[in-house]
Length: 285
Ligand SMILES: [Fe+2]
Image 1 (cartoon, rainbow, N blue to C red):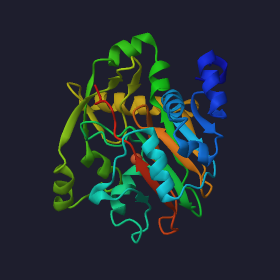
Image 2: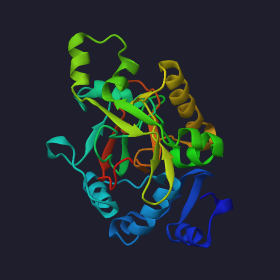
Image 3: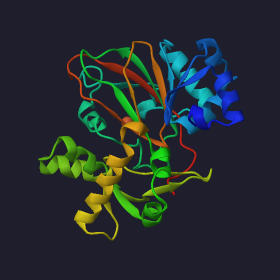
Image 4: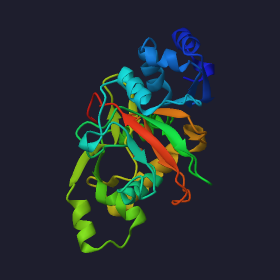
């Protein structure tokens, strides 16, 4: 929904949420107060705008962890982290995140949870410590990218299936793993997913990213051409919103209709984001 194509209903939602477009094809800045967000009164509108725009930005809203959890609970079914934690530290600092190696894969375009039966629905990041350089978080709209393909291209790819794996993501940053490392990554197995997600809403989005390994039934070269070609297509400037953080910013994304990545930053600078998330409501199908 760009301003140019917004329907009357869309315009009313934008007004209710005091929202403006970040880019024509992705992202809205929401101007509501923290109290209004926490009230839950706007949750249905926020969910609708999120699905249409892919990313919602709440500039310097300054959520505490408790407030971020409470807000996330208004958006959907709250999904705790492993070991029951409510908030996940996104940081390459070993003190703040003992699993920092796993995060290195997030520097490349991906969808969260493609290895799970139902990927997460929405996720929210709050900025706590800024990087000294770099460290923007970028999002691309995979609905808009699919929609902009020609009808011929859509017909060619609509029924293709793709093998996804976690071990593929790790090879991006550790191309020469030890046997033990490789076995550990591979213990998560592989899944086969459609290349085009046909959502229950009737909309379609592309399922790509660093877990996407090879197209079923295609030669390795043709498969690489297709997966890298579509990722290159979907991450063109017009489909991408790049968020430069201020402390206190919160950004929510629709994990079912976007890919995201972090831009490189000094791993020792202490950059810290707190993430919460909601359960997804449908498998990729
Ligand atoms: Fe991620």
